[in-house]
Length: 638
Ligand SMILES: Nc1nc2c(ncn2[C@@H]2O[C@H](COP(=O)(O)OP(=O)(O)O)[C@@H](O)[C@H]2O)c(=O)[nH]1
Ligand SMILES: [Mg+2]
Image 1 (tube, rainbow, N blue to C red):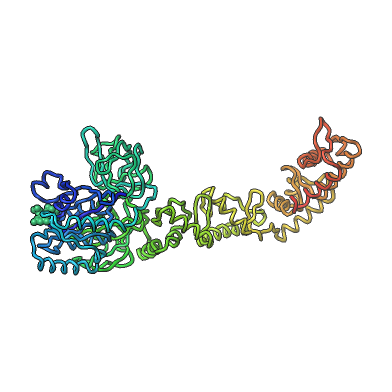
Image 2: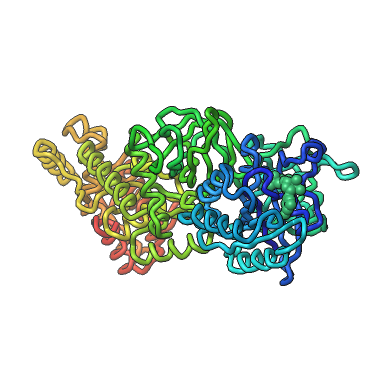
């Protein structure tokens, strides 16, 4: 098991000295730090607890000028060692660090009352009281408090024990299968090349993997992995990692970038977060304020839009959209801290709820939407993302859930019918209904516009719904299963839709019908039907659809009973003679060559007859042949 802890506390309270006493490693690695005796940037050390747990340590600067470095280091830790010097007690950065820990959701830790050798028991008791008072409303209110002296060594074992105790009950780090390493240091090492370090999150990173740097999109490959100077093949989430990268130059790397699997995390320039404003702020967070956003190891300047209200006063919380001046690589659920550049102060912070950059038309709408999307239960969060079809991956990202949580929420929602699966995606029942109604409306409109058509082209309805082909196919299946849409050859229709002729059309048809009946096997051509009776192509198609006529090819239309009588004559002749020629078929039916050809073709197509040289022969038994033609000329069976 590997864990990471970090220090926090006011400058000069003995953080770095304590880490050196615990680990033998001097976290102040810079020459300037050693000369000034003050931590400026992050320092790193590690120790092994008696139970074998490997603990990486991030030592942060306490001076207020370097708070941004503190913020870059503190984000990924499991627990904090809050250092308070017994001689000075609680100081400004003790409080500011405490507030930052709370904004970052770091709620586990140990209080180290250092420099115990400098004070007497009475003084120590007073300071303990003050410390408890300062922590009273924080998550560390009940954290173990250990009195130590790095100089004499007293209390160091007790401190180690308290750290072990706190880490022992810390939850395991999540593994979403999508490793990301927010870079806190990038440097070159002679003989190795480029190295970045950080606390690995959300997944396992392996030797040889191709990685991407976000922002920038530059690619590189993992040539070496170390944790606490030991070479490893795989780094696990929640461990301190040094990654040796090939294919990239140090000049292309910087603190704040994130190492990810290519394509697994996008940079963003607009994000929304639920922000708690500290009650110590000198002024409210107002609309359009310029703020510095700290998240992971990164920072960026941004303009803040307070959603849903004009401003957030001290102690208030609300939705804030941040328009970043340089992109950041963040995920939903990440913590962030907002600071004011001048006067320099921590404003507040909270949890990222959206990184898609969508701008809301109304700020109040955006706030309501974000409220929904961050609703507490996993199922509610999943459901809130499904206002349009989304893949499993998109759901996990937007709802900030791991694969297991997402899958069980999805299964629950599908069981209760609140979610519908569409091919590779899922959709809320409500959103599905919206699309279904849109499809029905489009069909109704198409039927009204073309009452003579049996249905509307699929593509036209698909376009109105706006689904890509695979999801559309699944969507249509659902509608057909539910009996809301019927498929008619290549067209789609509402089940209630019937081809209907208006009275004038009906009257024209009755005249044409009389003409067709007069000479059933030498009927007028479609062209004549149009010129003499006003039966245009569309009306003829409708009549065909209704079963009143049958078009054979594009140039012939017969009454169904004419086709049946033709077939009857031909089939009995074949039953008697075995074969029939075109001329014979014409003669026995009193038709003409021009009309006989499509009629014989129809029998061939239905598998009743077959050509044999110039003649035709019967394929089926005569009775079966008659029945087949009877079926083929009745509308319901076609
Ligand atoms: N007497 C005494 N001095 C200490 C102790 N711990 C740290 N110091 C001194 O306090 C000063 C600040 O320590 P440092 O570790 O740099 O503080 P940091 O800014 O919190 O990292 C240094 O001069 C240390 O030698 C301690 O337990 N006892
Ligand atoms: Mg220090």
